[in-house]
Length: 403
Image: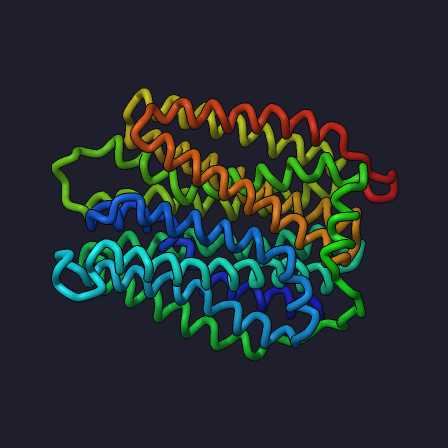
């Protein structure tokens, strides 16, 4: 019961904390563009993913040097910095209102804030995966990971629900103040996280590289990479699909609200995906379940193409649902497979963070490059990624006792 309490408590806090962070991540590009800081939102996301990717190599060493409550509390400051950026940008009605509103100064501020966010966010989510793993055993691994990820992914529902209803009455500036407050208050409760028994393990960059070179992990690297591509779509591309289906003469807050409604659907199916994949992974071959998550990936891509050409806001909800289910099931099965094959080896979660952030980084680059071009070209690139990933998942080998 102690381990289960640790899993539920830590992920409940993360759920409320991430509800504001994920809502902000999903809308930041749209709002910054509306404030005429073009591509500043995507630039911010790019820097977050890039610094998170780099720091994921070193993050395992930080985690083992401090107690869990310090690790979670300090690393949670990252997204608080990120949300404060929204307050700054939305406080500028014109680029001359305050000294920091000028484009060069604002870009410098956002670069610094996003760098801090990326460095700390990599520690936070690596800590979450490792903390989950250390609180599980072979007989409850899928169950506990399913509970943890379902709670965490619920943040998409909660954050986007209150965002959809509050963005118009509050306005963008007060909205980001509220989001920052929600994350800040939630982060305080990380102080009370209890530590599981800590295993002594020297984590070195050299040992991580050696692990990457092993044949066993190579097929998994593509699955890790895909999880980043999928994640970046929800943060940087889905809002563009939604905007294309709406009348262009509507207010910025109206477009934000409609985007949040689609993101609520994404969040609901994040949770549904987690609830479905957990019992399936316990009952059936884990590799086959991973292949099914990749088929969901394909369905999400096809649905996005149809929505783009039909220009239907209603279809956006189906597309959001598919991307939400794809994201959670892919994340959950990555955790499940890595924890099953490598037990509680913190190195493998660091490697996952690296390759996930590489995927997110490239996904962000593609979204920026194809912003002024037909989005179908972007979708064809990630379709190629889906095909390659499917081939690599087929090569994953599991011992019969761990299937």
